[in-house]
Length: 324
Image (cartoon, rainbow, N blue to C red):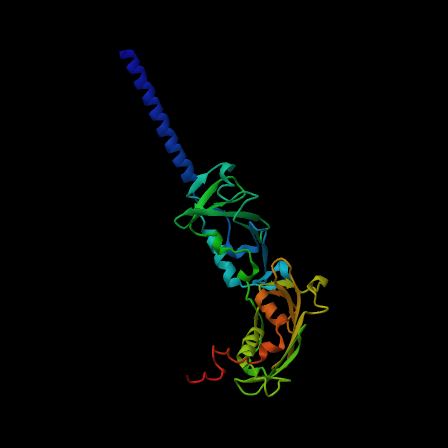
């Protein structure tokens, strides 16, 4: 028994020694690789940034002469003040929070090649390129991340929420704008007819063709006018006209008289997302606008601009009951 105990004691000591050795070796490895996720990465050196999400949306941002553009939308101007902070956050990401060194968990953490939350692809001035996968949340404000290597880390410097792969996140979405004070006349033509509006005072308008028994609904028109003079887009499509846009025979045309005459054509409605293609005369770009705005322009009818009498209360207008 003494010999057996001695043998077991020696074996235990050896196991403890191995455990300590492995522990410290792992700490040494971790310490040795802790540093920037991307070496020699500088935010100001990025020339192209491509953003993708799991729904196959894609935004390609390119830098030319210190200005940023949506290169997959006819070089529509992008907002560099929104892009640079993201690149600066990428530059700060460290490798001090290693999660795994194998690809077995990539899909579960949403950082795999085919299943990711966000994918950022960078091209730099020196011709090099990098990939950064942003996955699911690791808790406490942390996000799982991976380059094109198998190692997965956690970071609190950047989240998938900050890098939306929709164009509207990176541009000024105001597509058409004229001052209301300068707007004196508006004409709307759609399948329900042609409606002409003229300003009668700084706050009042009227519609051509109304009879004395048809009071103008100034409030209904003001709502339409506000949409017209400050028209927002969902995304730009580019400068090239396509037959699928349906602008050879627009569903609606709006003419605005301000400092000069402007025209806005409302084209085809997408059967999937129900957005509309739009082209303004003062812009070289074709864009998409939201369903509610497109419906408003294409479906308005004459009765929408006539003030309706208030609903009759029960018993109102009825002759008084005879006194019993």
